[in-house]
Every structure is written in C-alpha cells, then in structure tokens.
Image (cartoon, rainbow, N blue to C red; front, top):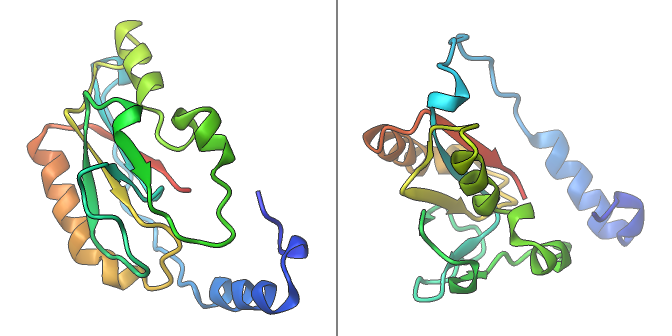
Length: 156
C-alpha cells in the first residue's frame, strides 16, 4: 500500500485535499440479518475489474460492470487507472480484490447459503460520491431482484 509519505509532495497534498473534502455518510437504521448460513452473498468491488469483452473503465467512470458468479479469473482484466495503484497482490491472488473463490469455498462448507449469480465492479478513487447514486441504486435493485442477502463491499 502506498503511504502519503511515499508520494511526491504535490500528489500527497492532492490526496490530503481530496480526503478533507469527503462528506461523512450518515448511519442507517439497524437491521437484524438472517444467519450467514442462510444468506446468498454477492461482491461489490471498486477494483475496476471487468470481463475481457467488456469496455474498460475510463477516468471518472460512474458506471459498473457485471461479473458472472461462474466466471474464471482468467476471463477478468483490471482497468483501474490510478498511478498509485499496486496490482501485484491481485496478480498473486485475485481473491484479495475479488474474493469469489473464498465465497465458493464458504458455500461448499455451509458457512454461507450460496454465492450470487452476479457480482458488481466499479472504478475506485471516486471523488464525487453523489455521481454514483444512480448506478448504486440500480445495483441495489439488481441485488434485491437476485435475492441477495449480503453484499460484500470490497474497496480497492
């Protein structure tokens, strides 16, 4: 992981300013979920992953890509574009960014009820969270339609 002290002064200051401009997210009402062993789980990631045939993400992208639950990591590519983005962990084990194999294992072991048929990937490093609201609401509706109980949020 890159630390601010590892960056040049201009980039480090840019990151400090962006962080200071982020708005807090108010807490939502608490719900009591059903046990994980009965839940269908999906992944929502900001890794910029997509299938080889999909359009790559562009700078400032506010859309998302569908990742089928049966996908093989060999069919996925990364188009996250940050200069400060270290891809070496993903190259060693894609589950670090997108823990699909771990979810499959958990389903086989009975720790979760099942793995969703669809998962979702966004481009990370979004300074304007409000711009993502339409895509976020759409993904929420898709998750509900697929009867997903738990969305595992994986920020990258």
